[in-house]
Image (tube, rainbow, N blue to C red; front, side):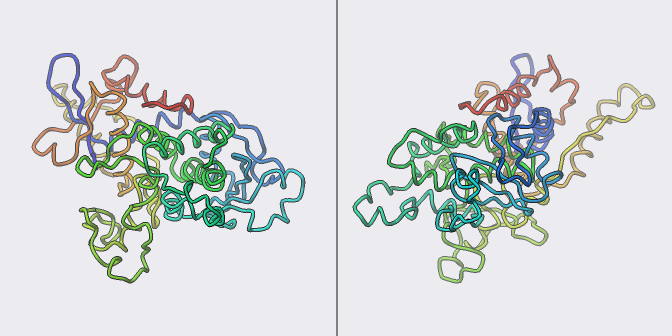
Length: 404
């Protein structure tokens, strides 16, 4: 994973290193500033008047209030489907929305609900991306097996990303195609989980998941040696645990991953090498989601606060004191594997958007080099060296169009 951002200023001086954790504070601030007005639909407690969300600020407003004000059931319509958010902030598909608007929703059979009306895990959602033929399998046996190829190529990934962007806009999911029905039975509940439920647990996740769509659409390489890219299945779940859970007992489940993986497998989620594939449920996919209780720490709000009065400190020592105080503020924040995944997505996206100014680097590349703790007033405010970075994040939240 990438852990730091290297910044090469156009003015004098060499490259500067900024810890990715520092950037999460900036991401939090920009995201919360974009929370907008209420969208159409009552949503909470009104199955006959679901939310109809079409702009990033609408989604952010609902997500920011999801656990605080909408603790019970809430309803959302996407792509002609009725989506339910329950008290646990799990998301399920409840069937065609027209049935509920006509007062017949209560009689909707489970067979008409995606995943049988049960909130799917990201592992199950990833299985559908790899094996879309499991959706409406009868069509495959009747001679239409050709439409059931895995949705893992860059072309299929762009198809899925475009459909997800349309769902976020509240528009028709996609032009009619041989994939349409299977996407309609898979994507609306997934979009609600990624952008409403995850955003409710951790507001930064909303912006980061939009960035993941950009990385996937651009075909950004994850592993240069293997040549793998951000396909939707890898975003959702680790490919070597697609059919393996924590309780799976087999030679494959107890064998180590084919490539080295580090994850929160130690006591109290301490990072350690993953030695068995049936531990990969703790790792999940590239998305900074909440595998096995991860979000309880990953969603902690990050705040810097105001710098204490420095008038009693000699002028020559104030910068050193300020840096020490900022490092202390960073260190007291809860930091978990989820944050590491957030940083990896954020630094990769910044490097993609500003390739001539920024480069994402990992921990091995910074050994013996000083890492900066930015002065927020100098670096991130208007006119500062990194003001364009703040603007880039804010621009990502203007609409749902691709930023690649």
